[in-house]
Image (tube, rainbow over all chains, first blue to last red; front, top):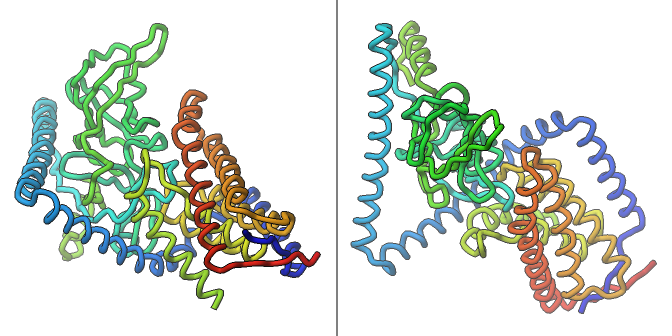
Length: 293
Length: 163
């Protein structure tokens, strides 16, 4: 049992109220500026918080690793993990090859090829999940100091994971593809129809704004269209599981099963430059006599 | 000494909330320790400290979340200051009243957050309230009540009204 108190001076209450009122007024009058300022100030704070965060994340990963290696079936698990990685890599390859085949057909007709450089990617580890329950996001152990910026795409060899939304010096927050606030330009691989892929509340994804005349069907694969955002064309997003075509509607939509199990993802790749950009960077580097990044 | 304690609290809250709590989550819901910490500081140390610690927690936790900054500052800072006021107004604070208070505050902040999502229709908002906001409010209330009980047993705090 605890007796409530009021030992603090009456002035403290006033100061607290005035501070809070001022902050509220500032937040509502200048939301962008205040957010920008606090995000800027958060840079150095991120370094300080990054130390315990990385330490605890590595302890956590160590414990999880020990558990998986010694308590769980060691051999089977390792083999399973290896096979899963291999399968993810092959899925990615398969998707890219299908995309390449479709692209070659179109490009052969056009007879105008442009040399494409591979995108530059940064490998990062997942060290945490969103601090709240309201967003589906992951925290990476790489940040501004490693060249990561907001809006960069995040992938695994199997497909798209999400998009960077915030960065501090040594960490970054990635909004997952399954979050309703995320939107990625997608393309149905077979029909070449475009749409917008958004997350759903249930933790899946949905492709919206598909043309009404599109002949999509269950099992069709959705890849990135490469039109907007930090993703090059042809990265696997997911597979259509259900089509929603309503009478009188201007567009149809489809539910997707994301290719990557974002709830279990541990290592990711951040796309620093897309195909087109990396070619430009390489050209600039060549003209300056420096190696491309 | 107090400053150091608050600094450690704020620094350790981030890894606790983002790295360790996901393992302890039930039905993918984890308690908001930032909210609980701000309420406890407000209750034990008064409204000014509650506000400042709440704002710091809100700001720093927001650096590691995809959420809106204003909401995080408003809820955590607001809880700190509100707990300070209530601690002054109530003659006795028990684990039960602490839990009930946190449940209500968490519910209010969750509803505010659900309403602030711009691209959700009413069905989705209702789904969010049922499956995220309500369970989290219960979770926050239970964790707050538990922590309050532990702290009050540990410190045997008895503070008297003066005004």
